[in-house]
Amino acid sequence: MPKIKKLLVANRGEIALRIMRTAREMGIETVAVYSEADRLSPHVNYADEAVCLGPPPSKQSYLLGEKIVNVCKELGVDAIHPGYGFLSENANFARMVGEAGLIFVGPSPESIEVMGSKLAAKQAVAAYDIPLVPGTEEAISDISIAKSRAVEIGYPILIKASAGGGGKGMRIVDSEEEFEEQMQRAVSEAQSAFGDGAVFIEKYIGSPRHIEIQVLGDQHGNTVYLFERECSIQRRHQKVIEEAPSAVVSPTMRKAMGEAAVGVAKACNYYGAGTVEFIVDEKLDFYFLEMNTRLQVEHPVTEMITGKDLVREQILIAEGNPLSFSQEDLRINGHSVEIRVYAEDPKNNFLPDIGRLETYRRPQGPGVRVDDGFEEGMDIPIYYDPMIAKLITHGENRQDAINRMIRAIDDYRITGIQTTLDFCRFALGHQAFVSGDFNTKFVELHFSPEKLEPIFSPEEQELLAALAVEFFQKEESRLSPTQPMKKAPTTNWTNRLI
Ligand code: ADP
Image 1 (tube, rainbow, N blue to C red):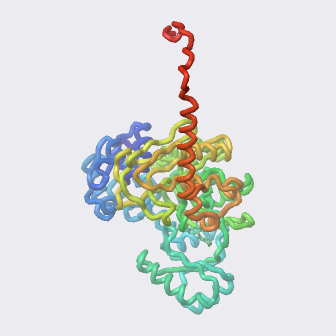
Image 2 (cartoon, protein in one colour; image 1 turned 90 degrees about the vertical axis):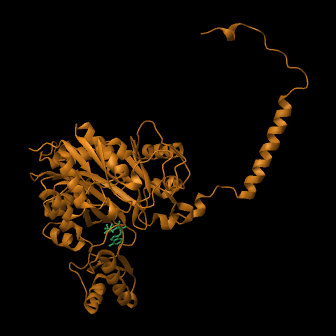
Image 3 (cartoon, rainbow, N blue to C red; image 1 turned 45 degrees about the vertical axis):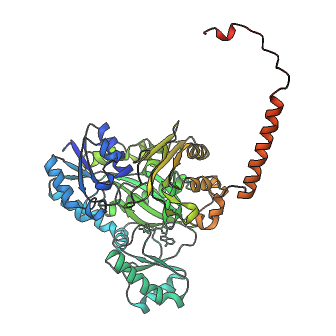
């Protein structure tokens, strides 16, 4: 079995650092790649070797697959971990890596290809007993056929780009009158954003929950599920708060979802770490959405409740080792919550707020984990995702994990830029979140920027400040006696060194 001795991490920021930490624990040498904007980044500093790929834009640096493969050849690297984003779900890159005689720490190019297309994925799982959202199984281009299918499915429906991702390429249609126009828009958007105009129709589930299952498969046909993560707190289809386990999944539902996820993985001969996403309706019926063929941003919550290091498992699987545990060996221990700390201003429509981290102090203490890729004084570059850190807590139960998260948010010190910390604190303290009765509409339903404003208006704050000054002045005059104060009895007691 090939043993990985030197690993190149084709990524940046927190995930590059997180992968390298595990590699180091496993005695594997690490190579970082970076763009000119990331020259001083902790992931560059942490690696045993580091190579500059080029100017800041991703296309001129982190997406240069061929250059990265050449770096591996020059430095005697034997494996590449792609992290998430960038080249992680690029089947051509995975193929190129394999053809260069290197190990790709991830699934086969074929699995990536099948699951990269939402339609191909639906077709692949058809032979397995996987619940799918009612809809068309094929790309649809004829408007009149599409319209009659939409009537059969029942409005509201969702037009989705087969090649879509990152929450992009979806259009809700409420009635037949809007159908034609929305369909035309969806096709042209899909064409320009993804270079593939294929769209399909799905029933629009009104207020769904997003619950996903972590799977691990080895190259010998063994596949297990590491339970669920709930990621229903989203903003514009982007996850903001994740937790494991979900507040609403019962052991029976967990088993059914887990087995469905294993079925999806088997449908594409999956090996490595992967995530099977489901949408869950109000009746708690679940439907397969898609499979992400990479390590997920929110993977730490699964690590916290299972005690498994998913990067370590990925590396062992890539080396060809069989899984060292079975489904029965896996247990859920406590509860874990993760928040994504973005350099975005929640009071200003979550606009990116790029700048310098003037103060940057991480929370610490029991059950607190921070995965980040910045240090105090560093600038947040404008070229990439504005995520500064992931803050993760673990507790004995859900409420403990939430309380710990609120404490950790309060202990986090970030100045110089606006962040989503306040927003997350608001969400975590909200009754809907605490009770577990929420869905992907949480932000729309419950959040508005005023919710983050201080309880008092600026005028009230001024008044309060004036009252406070007056109070302290009075206190001071009361405490500074006109008569000399009686001297405390002298004793050598205080001078004694104990
Ligand atoms: P992407 O690949 O862009 O992430 P997904 O298919 O995973 O697309 O969907 C992203 C999000 O969009 C889901 O988490 C959910 O909030 C919403 N969504 C997707 N499909 C549906 C649907 N049929 N009905 C309602 N909401 C949906």
